[in-house]
Length: 399
Length: 233
Ligand SMILES: Nc1ncnc2c1ncn2[C@@H]1O[C@H](COP(=O)(O)OP(=O)(O)OP(=O)(O)O)[C@@H](O)[C@H]1O
Ligand SMILES: [Mg+2]
Image 1 (cartoon, protein in one colour):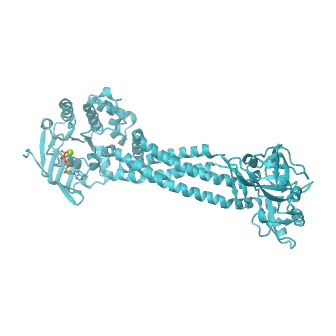
Image 2 (cartoon, helix red, strand yellow; image 1 turned 90 degrees about the vertical axis):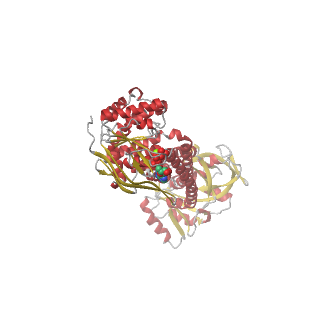
Image 3 (cartoon, chains in turn brown, orange; image 1 turned 45 degrees about the vertical axis):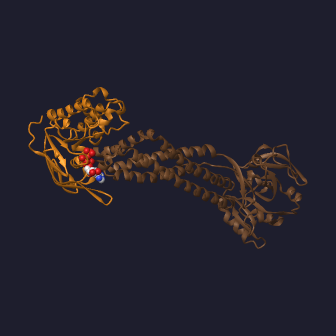
């Protein structure tokens, strides 16, 4: 008699009756949905910051490109390389070449202060001196407005992120830093990568302006293939004339983003976890009141022969559906509010601003909805068990 | 048609029921005996709190005795697991409650259909049974109505239709007219009497009302945990 089909149809019916009675409990149900939506929105929102930051840092590096720094330097900030060293590096095996020579760009940078558009306060922006190969040693760098600076002239091009975040960086205007004036002749994009937060000029001109002599901080190279990395690295690290550190671009940026990504992620989880505890109590409350309001209904169904197990499962499903509604709402809100929200933050490894966009990825949405489901299951379990366990005869006495 | 009612349908033997409320023990039924032959219409009377509902619940498999045996149609209810008991109820008993206990979000026909959801009947078969049951209680014209739009008497008739729709062995009614005025109550009693006389339903009805018990074929009185054939004063 009570076969599995029958049992499923029992679950279906009881769930349906429960959902049909939600309008009578819409206050508590709405509060639960909103509470859970809040948890999911915060979780997804905060994690989208980390995802966006990480994205900005990782699209910057491709596996067939490498960065060479002075040995012992964790970032370009604290690195230094002489002209001779940069030549040896550019001519090493594995470095891709074109008719113009090796695809290697010896670079240096200084940090300048510019007012943020949003707050008006000053923030650090890297002004980077590059060589001709700079556009080829990075992926997806394109001039999107104006033109490239002329070599030997004190002109600059501005990353699209920097142009958006900081005031006065339009093509045609002039960037004044200290005694120098740098006409802005173009805007470039880098597919959301870190370069977009920078301002570029000719390395030679920058060396002169800042009395850097003939020294650089890093060499960016494009390799023949990702597999060429090891040979390239070995040839440099075993060269007694050099004392350098060689990292893949992708790893360099991933490492740079790690601290901040981890900080944001930890913080996001912590906040969401605390809120989730609150939401579990909200769901518990809703389901307990649902069970209380339906004591007689449930007892009647059980008197008619509906099973206790079917009651438990149906109430859990009801709780789960309420929670999922909250999860979808929260995920949707987070998507609308945060996806592609542009901002900039301090990159602690370079002490300069990185501009990036929050990214509400499908993965984050799934994760947020999984959290809501968990809240629903935990919040529904105890009330459901109580409903199924309470003696029918006693429950029928209640009015 | 039921002509003969000699075979015992319900037999309650040496039943004791003790409730616990905190440390306090409430002895409701003690060493109680009852036999109900198939096809009988039995009224169960007694003062408030005497244990009428408790006894009815034991017979309906909603509760278990502390001691003693309860058998219905040869099945020992006191020995069935919760799960088997639920399945047994679905197949063998119809309940009629004082406050009707209808699902407010379901129409009359959906309410009546509820017990049929536990059978293997097809949708079409269920709908046939529902129509027949509603016709039997004279509510065919109200099948699409929600409980709140029905009078108390009509709601109770829906309750009875739900109780009989599976054609159960036994119909148990706990004060079915307790919440109704005299006229509506009489209609319900007519209905129950008809079900017993014309359709051979075995009915046990708990009531306070002598007017109601007068409709039954036999009345037993519950007092101090025991049954007797005379009202105890
Ligand atoms: N689940 C329970 N837990 C504790 N005590 C109970 C429980 N069910 C019933 N009782 C007690 O058992 C006694 C008998 O209750 P029962 O409902 O069977 O009486 P009744 O004869 O139906 O009364 P009424 O005419 O008021 O409906 C009462 O004292 C009641 O308080
Ligand atoms: Mg009672």
